[in-house]
Length: 470
Ligand code: FAD
Image (cartoon, rainbow, N blue to C red; front, side, top):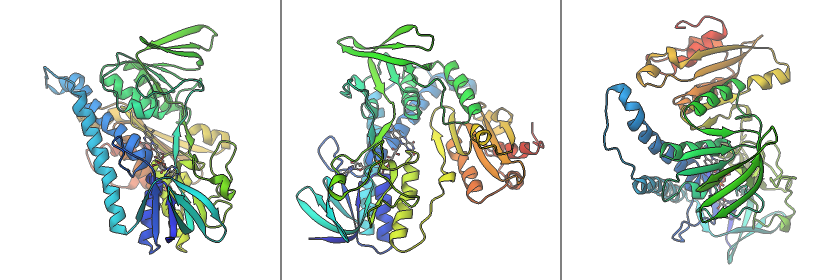
């Protein structure tokens, strides 16, 4: 029987990064992965690379270019006629990026001498070492890192065929642009996928059960986003209670009621169900070794991702915390370093969130509503992109940056951005929070001119009411 220092189960961003870091640290490492592509070949990369972050960003970029050429180039004095959508090529481009990235991980495994065990990994027995069955083979591990990720939550009684009623997987591969697209769930995935298909020509209607829009975001950002998205034609209904969902030859009918109690029906050609994701422990054999799950199905871990079983760790979407690829990656590095006897570390207060809509939304740290609830005294600095030369030259003046700093110490507590390339700008704020910077620190750092990042500096200056350009 093959024996390893570390066996990682799952090769999404959490698992494959954990495996590479463990191997870098001199531990003999294997990674088990069961994902197969449509041709039946095994694939690394998990949800993120195959049907999540990467393909969605590829389609967001392509659809944004389509939107720009049709609607935004005019302002630059460029007229484009005869613009056509070639959806097949767009989808092939997305697939080739996925293929490049996933085969890249296979190359990284070879380079770092991580053994890739193809098949489903099941914990069979354990004690001081652990036995894991991978299809017909059994291997032994001194340490196990579980990184089995998450799967889409479906509506009870509503079958997903990924053709007409879809989750993220089907919604990233429509073979034609649906005329009427219904989406259940106005979370990050619903908004991103809705943006893609709206830009490509669908009439998009989104139904959301919560009464508030983007409840996790800072309220001022959520308000601005609501106003921009609805002005741009995204039809979003909040506070709905879903009734019957029925499918016929003509498409899908969704019966629902709204806050005032009135009943409505949404008819669409295709429906995306994006009501969140649930941890995935199917086939893992948790019960064989007494691995504890919490009431929502997540594997129970401490702050260092240790389970109650010696030598067994769990990371990524299958444990508590935000379901974000980079959170899982950082947990993977932390756990590999702990196994190697180092002081692995993750700062859960400095994990950025991004919504890749247009404009983008990104934040790190506390929201204003959280600071109020915690009774923390803070000061706010806010600056709009509309006063920034680079934003104007890019024809992207929408949005703002908001910096929240401790009233007594000026330490940065949260930074909230809505605007073009917010996903890139937020990194400065993550560094500031990680290094315990003050808003004065950001305000005194030289920022390139003209650049969008100057808005970050102006917002930091605005905390002390001394913005220079507005
Ligand atoms: P996963 O990526 O889900 O990987 C788990 C892997 O484990 C899978 O490959 C699975 O096959 C394998 N596995 C499960 N059980 C077994 C078993 N028993 N044996 C062997 N293998 C097994 N996050 C971001 O940070 N940024 C984004 O822009 C973003 N966009 C997204 C867009 C969409 C449409 C979706 C659906 C998600 C997006 N996410 C994004 C979330 C992100 O994809 C997840 O947070 C991330 O993939 C979690 O990584 P993971 O490694 O924990 O799990």
